[in-house]
Amino acid sequence: MFSSGILVVIAGPSGAGKTTLAHHLVKTFPNTRFSVSTTTRKPRGGEKQGLDYDFVTTAEFSRRREQGFFLEWAEVHGNFYGTDGNWVRRQLARGSSVVLDIDVQGAMQVKRCVPSAVLVFMLPGSREELLDRLTGRSTDSAETVDRRMKAAAGEVSALGSFDYFIENRRLEDTVKMLEAVFASELRKLSNIGWPVAAGEYHPEHINGLSWWKGRRVVVSSGPTREMIDDVRFVSNRSSGLMGVSLSEAFLAGGAEVTLVSGPAMRTDPPGAVKLLRVNSAEEMLEALRRETLGADLLAMAAAVSDFRPETAVPGKIRRRGKVLSLNLVPTVDITASLGSPCPVLAFALEYGDRSEEEALEKMKRKGAFAIFLNRGDMPGIAMESPDNSGRLFFSSGSPPVSIARGSKKFAAMGIAAALGREMERRS
Ligand code: ADP
Ligand code: 5GP
Image 1 (cartoon, rainbow, N blue to C red):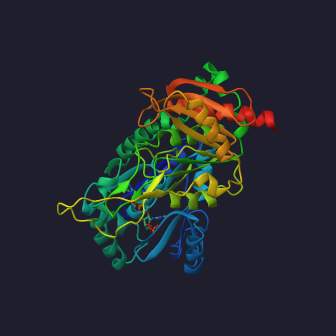
Image 2: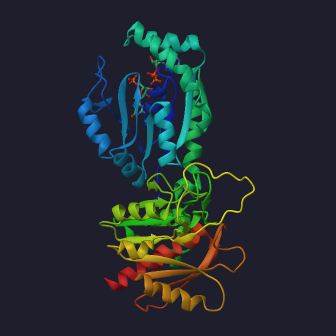
Image 3: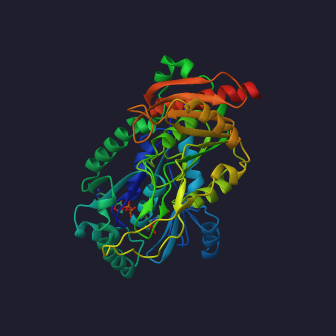
């Protein structure tokens, strides 16, 4: 079954040894690819189009940037450089790992849209060593070398955003350190997704999952924030874990997954998932409008705020001992406004004896294809908790499926599989 590859980013000053080490990883680990960047820089002696870089004009670079082609892009030493986002996600989705050799600004952008990316900061043994290497490469003018040395100081100030620091003194030692990092990251369960061996123990739990192969699934996740002023907001306790877990589950089934997430504690799906961050209910609606076109399912795991302040005040409201009254008005009803072009899985968090009736009414009202009912009044599950359990109801009247208590990762797998079985029955 599916296993997502890992995305490793090597950054650091020019001349640190990034390209040398990136190519070493690609040669050493099977199923590992080097991401060829797009640049507006002119080819240096011996560099080949498509192999070292995709060399393009500034106009072509701008066109691609506007079309959202890049996972990240930056201006480095007077030229533009960027990484092809779709290529990276495609490689990861088919289980290949990808190595990026990019600058520090780019690395930080990658961490934002692929939180599971592994960021390695590389420095040579000393400043003198860096100077020697840049001069020794003899591809750059003295002026360029000087500019790159000055830039190195600024780049080092971003060190705190990285996961690993590697000093590239003796190449043999660096190689060993980097190989160790790469090998450990490959074993992380969050990168493996759903291990084949585990699946063999629970075939009934995952039957139906493969229905999603090649299909497009959009998952919404987390709370939304409705601003009172530029500092405070109305929100809820949703952690975003259920949405992240659903993304992993559909990905494990072979789907192409987009996660539209509000500002949650958990916004770290596997790298193959396209992650879009939003704040308010309105922004979530806009993102879903774009993303659900041509999709096969929208899983609305987001806990969209039901209310928002009638007006958001710019700046910060001063305290000054006054009583502040908030006028709350309903937020946009996303499912209703969307008139989703694809089937919708709704979620119901219900309290009390009428939970099931409420959930079934909600499924009808929202025109949803299915609804997952989890109880708000059962300790240890649903909001802010690592676990979940509940019942999945179908609008067709097919018998509901009970999802036993377990980690959200496990529950999500059960939901995605049950939905796949229902889709199969209907088709
Ligand atoms: P970057 O991609 O960070 O600009 P490169 O990989 O091109 O850096 O390395 C710059 C130069 O330093 C190259 O000539 C490379 O062969 C050399 N180099 C890399 N690592 C070492 C090392 N540990 N010891 C000596 N030379 C090195
Ligand atoms: P060079 O011109 O020496 O090949 O690269 C100059 C700098 O640009 C290096 O630090 C390199 O890592 C960085 N770079 C190369 N490709 C990319 C890219 O796609 N994105 C970003 N942000 N930086 C890149």
